[in-house]
Amino acid sequence: MADANAAAVHPSGDWPARLAALVGGVLVALSLPPWGLWWLAPVGYGLFAGALRRASGWRGRTLDGAAFGVGCFVVGLYWLGEFTIPGAVIAVALSALMYAVGAALVPRGPTVTTLGFAAMITLTELVRYRVPFGGLPLAGAALGQVDGPAATVGRLSGDLGLVFVVALVGSSLAAAVVATSGRSARAALEAVIAFAVAATAVLASAAIPAGVPLGQIAVAYVQGGGARGLRASDNDAAAVYGRHLAASAALRPGLDLVVWPEDVIDIGSPITEDPTRDDIAALAQRLGATVVVGVVEESAERFKNAAVAFDLSGNIADRYDKVHRVPFGEYVPFRSVIARLADLSDVPRDAIAGKGPGVLLTRAGSLGVLISYEVFFADRARAAVRAGGEVILVPTNAASFRGKQVPAQEVAAARLRAMETGRAVIQAAPTGYSVFVDADGDVHQQSRLGRRQVETATVTKRTGFTPYVRYGDAPVILTSAALSLAAWQVRRRRRDRSEELS
Image (cartoon, rainbow, N blue to C red; front, side, top):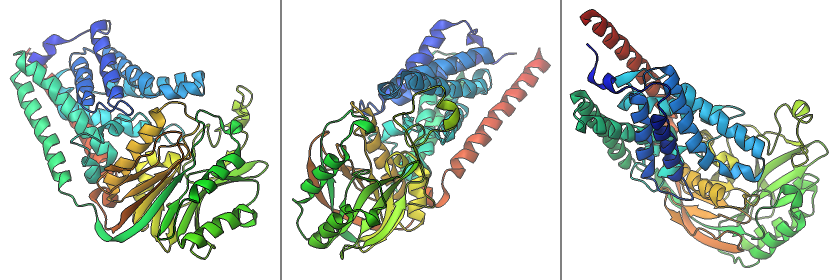
């Protein structure tokens, strides 16, 4: 006797179901910045879950997953096309392949519901966050939820936990559709349970405090402004530096911390030997403040990308070298092979990766640091806070992008890191977005793209660990893995029972 839900299966050639999965992926992408329609994500996941619920075999589920991935990442990663069409195609194809594999591994029929579906989405995003070459978290569904009611789940279980909850709501919607059509009483129960689990996670996370206040500091970010959409080779490093030095002239004493963006000082020698050191030292002395600047130190074959802190006396107090480099942006994997197939003139040398958590010990406090791309990786923020970070700095440079998509997603990532860690975030970019984010993830004084802008704010330093900082991604990963295994076990038992009754 077959389960009632199994009556509505579709073969691998059911293109209406493929279309539903494709539209579901597009809706999830439109929940992301700069569109920010957060409520579309659960609807999109609901369409995907509905398609999988009716799939008759692994081929159909694979095609559904691929369709969802194409819809999501053609839209969510369209910015890649500004730099390389082949690279964009490869990135979309790899991301879609991950969802195709994830969907294929979901059990057939009614077990493709609620908790099992959410677990599959979460584990697929986990893989996408990690591989290849350290992962690509941009276009991750969590980024679209910073203005939604589930955002605080990050404080409880990180961005993967947030993805789980949003996917769970989506799969509960799919189950509710089945229930209201009169096809399954079990689906109604599944919908209620799934929604109750999601609501419990949201309510529990909302009650978690954002650390323990330690005191306040007066902070300024400096955005020098300038043209956007330029490749690194087209930028005039001296002009970029000059704009930031000129913008900083407007600052007055009374500050504790000044934050310059990434790669504002681009030099061919160590900062300790370059004349720019005297300019920054003089600025720190004039303001009586710690000044953190983004420095790229070039050499013939390699370079370093660092955040360097100058103290009140003008001396270098501490330094952090970027650990998580941008593949094909700051280094080229398998360079000797790829150089035979592609023009690598825009990435002529590889960055030297730093080590350890990003923390600067300064008079202004213990400053966690995520340089640019690192803001998309929750583990980097977690490591910085566990190492003593009382606020988080994000010196970044999104000047190469013509559109708003990457800068907007970067702000969303900064907000997620604030909520996950219970720390205020100060982001500074040469052409924007620069922003102050409080420990609850709320935005204050966001700059405009391309403008010269210097803003100040009073920022609260904090200590203490949120559940996510304390335990990381392990609870969500283990829970998702257990739920996936349980779904297969349920499927096997139902199949055995059906065979006994037939």
